[in-house]
Image (tube, rainbow over all chains, first blue to last red; front, side, top):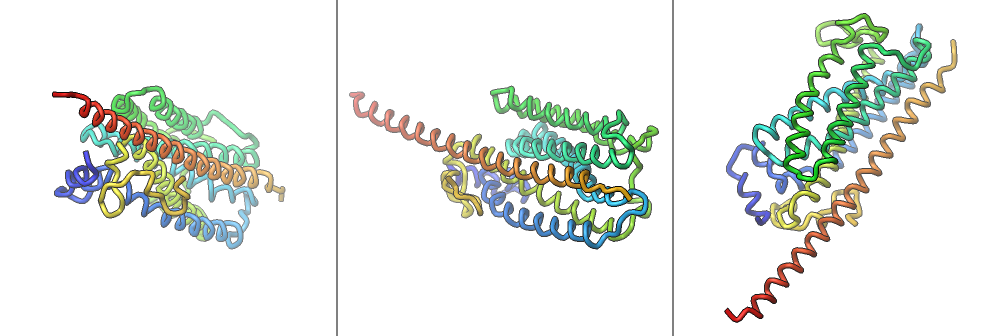
Length: 269
Length: 60
């Protein structure tokens, strides 16, 4: 199938359907990567400046509370990315779209890294605050299970040679594993945990100083932008690997081998 | 108040390391994907050339 045919297949449908073709999505993803990386860098710099320079020292925890500016965004992203994986998995199973399965696969490593960062920073925040790096607390243990679920999806994908079978198996695992996300979120309400309850909620006023909250929210936006950019780079590589070179379109929609379309900021070698 | 700079450094330092590792892994993944695509394309060209040569030899 030629790139122009693959693109025309989705031309008549709604916007989301138009970009469901890997051939059409490839150049769009390439155009979005740099803006999202730049946004992540700018937001990260602003968030860290507010968090480390403007935000005051906590009267109870001292300086160690500043770990919150990386711990909370990473923990939120670890859950959001898993839910996004379950969403793409559902689309892959119901609509049988290749791109959905590739998006799932592209998100998994970033989600695993975010989960690792949440656990790691939590341990290094726990030591000065609780006096221990680790406890088998409901919130921490369920977050660790999330890390194993990410490993499961990555390992499952790597262990099955047939792409379509691997896509279905990973989609199913992502959907079933999503049940762990509400358990993580509500664990501090359902059980007595050493881990503190939510400081920020949609239904109640925040329990932290405004500058701390602003820094944390800006860092969260930076984590979003970084995760999106990283997943787009990874999904482009997956499209190159899985789609025949002649079907991958350049930005004008015409046929062009994938390796001739260098992403901005890369040498393309 | 106690000095907590070790814990902060370990948190942000490892975070920075993770970002660098992930960006490096992405770069390697992309290089590998492009290499595979080039090999696939070269294989397809060879196959197409073989088919046209076979047609020339086939009297029917």
